[in-house]
Structure formats: C-alpha cells, structure tokens
Amino acid sequence: MKNIIPHFLLFTVLFFGFASLFYFYGKNIWYPYYKKHSYKETLTPQPIVPCDECTLTHVEPLQQPTIVQKECPEQKPTPPTEILSSKQKLKRHLADSDFIVYPNNLTLIGLKHEKVLEVWTKKNGKNIHITSYPFTAFSGILGPKVKEGDRQIPEGIYGISYLNPNSKYHLSMRINYPNAFDKRKAREEKRSNLGGDIMIHGNAVTVGCIPIGDDKIEELYFLAQKVGINNIKVILAPVDFRRMEVSINKKNKHPWLRELYTQIKKEMVTY
Image 1 (cartoon, one colour):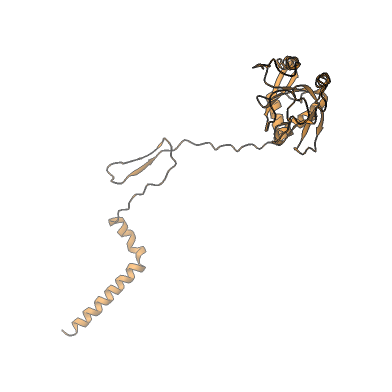
Image 2 (cartoon, one colour; image 1 turned 45 degrees about the vertical axis):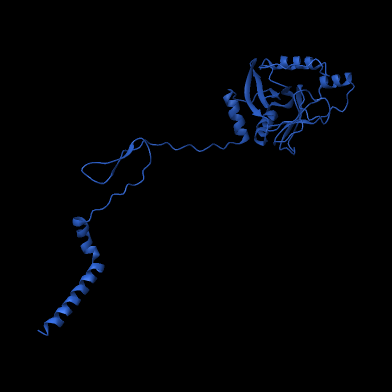
C-alpha cells in the first residue's frame, strides 16, 4: 500500500507533463479536429465598395449576418488632367474655331465694365470669335484716358505698335495710345502730357494697362507674332455696346465723348 501512493503521484506528474507538452507543441495535430467539431467561428463582415448592388442581410437558417455581394458596375477611371503648353492651348482655341492655319488678322475688343478681352478674326467676310481672356486686375473708372497718371485704360480704336519679349510683366503688347483722335481732342482742350505705354501684358497688376495673366499673354503674344502687328486692331470700350448703352451726363466736361462712343459702337456692333 505504501508503494501505490508514490507510483500514483509519479504517474499523475508524468501524465500532466506529457499532456502539457502535447497541448503546446502538438497544437497543429489536435487543433484542426477541435476546430472542426466544436469551434464556431464568428463571421465578421468585411468592408466592401459601396454601390447600389451591394447589401448586408440575414440569410436563414444562419444566425450570423452574411454578406451578399454582387458584382459592382465597373467604374471607369477618371482621365488625368491635361497639361497643355500655351501654344497647345492656342491651337485648341483655333481648332475650335475651325482654323487649320493661323488667321491673317485679329481684332481685340477690351471691355472695361465686363473686364474681359475678346479675340476675334475675320474669315471669308465673317467675324469669328476665337477666345476671351478675363482681366486679372483693373484700375481707374469708366471713361477715356486724358492725361498721364489718371490710371485710366484708354477708350477708342487703336493698333499694336510693338511686342516686348522682355517685359517685367512677362510679355507685353503696346497699344498705340494716344491715337490721332486723342491728340486732336487734347489740342482742342489745350491738354498736354497725355501719358503712354499702355500695354496688354501678363501678371495681375496694372495702372491703366490690361493684364490677362502670364499663361494667357503667352497665347496671345504667340498669335500676334504669327498674324503680324500691322494686322491687329484694338477696340477699347467702356461697356459692351452690343448689349448696353452709356448715359452721358450733359455736364460732362468732354463734349466729344458722344462722338467717341459712336465710333466705338460702330466698330464693335459687327462682332
């Protein structure tokens, strides 16, 4: 009897020792059977791409939620944004206006109230709108330029006297202000020092000029080179006379203003 107790204790120690070793080091043997016959795995819904064809529902007799996912409609990738050079943008404007080659004439219409510069050309007797460039800055008020330093954008019919590739405002095109009309009216009113150097240029600053931004002046400058400055007309107007009129105060100190606006309107209404 005395020998049975020590043997039982030794057997117990050995049994639990081997059982522990088998539990930790033999898990790959016994765990699959345990999982198959006695372990119920909880179903965890996985995130899916939301669309009208995907739903989360309960399907009997299962007690766990089951994901029923139909094939979602194929989503077309968003095309990358085109990065075009100024020359490519200009060619696209011309192509949209049905031009295969560069036009041989230009008319630039600067509208002070609307703050936009329109680009037109004439082809086979028909005026064609190529594109428009919004002003990036503005100075002065509606009304003509009459002296240096008044911050006014001129109003009248002008041309382009030269192109400046070395402008501090990226690129610039000089408008030939003052023209013959401006000089004649200044002599009648005994005015001098009319100012000058009125440009269409890049950047977004101005004191009486027309800025349209660096990328847009690159387009227009290149087009002006192709057309030639002698074939460019510039119409600068207080408002778009094709859509509205200007009320001139009877006390206006420039009695010739109505004559000027009649000239501008006559030139503009055909475009």
